[in-house]
Image 1 (cartoon, helix red, strand yellow):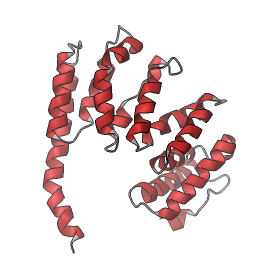
Image 2 (cartoon, rainbow, N blue to C red):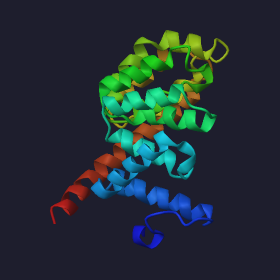
Image 3 (cartoon, rainbow, N blue to C red):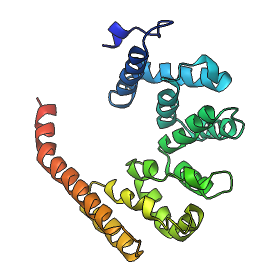
Length: 223
């Protein structure tokens, strides 16, 4: 499929084809850990940091996300610098969302702390990506619980943390399922009962799927 789509977008080509090319590259880089795909997306990221307008809009967010997944503190600092000098909302959010993809727990903590600064608007608060990422999940969840009062204050009293109850659905093990259920239930958040039940069902489904399919996957890989 990658060969059929070609290495670069065709000028004037359909948006669907450009979007598909971007997704195929991401699958190659993230799931396949293809070094060529990773290198290509890192090169795209470097070009984007020099001139955002020169990179296809379908490709840029995925390129920055993949580069972050394979990036270090030096690249993180570059993202933060570009985020603070972004000239358009699109450029700002491309860098902002990619911060969640760095796998280093220390960088995740920096992102979490950045969320509570005046530089981030209350409507842009986003902790789900770091909590869903298995590399940063533990540090992000523990930080989230400790700072939940500050998060609610920044979010606004009228919402009172309700928008974050869905985070309880991001886990795939019984320990974190129970911990998140107990934590959110203890916060007495209005209207949280049903979202918490839905979150528990989703986590249970993930646990069941993993339990059923893990032996099958192991057997397949041993062939």
